[in-house]
Length: 131
Image (cartoon, rainbow, N blue to C red; front, top):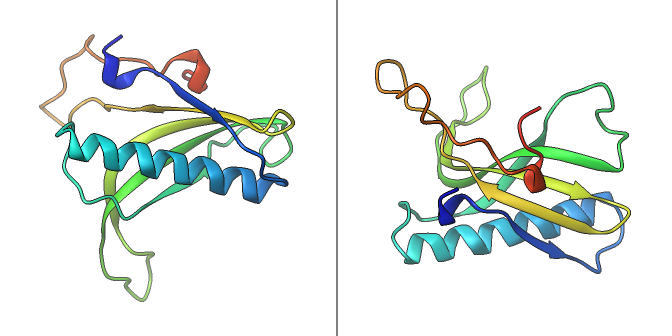
């Protein structure tokens, strides 16, 4: 596993799901900004947004996996669609009862005609793996 894709983890004193998730998003934002300073990818990083990955326990599980993006660009909102956001993808796993979370940078395969089959790197299990 390349060092840039390894799991990072933290705990928080925050109480409640919304506050714990906010603490995790702030941790990803700080990490992403540090990565920009080191030249790992382009910034700026404005903030991080996460969406729960769907599944049978969506919204009810004690341990939840999220797809996140460290947002570098937010486009204009149109009348029929939310604004376009682009940036660096991350995956986040939150253990709410323990107030512990782990995140990993994700490097998705390239777009049509640019991917290299067999070169994808799965997120570590600490970040929720692939599910």
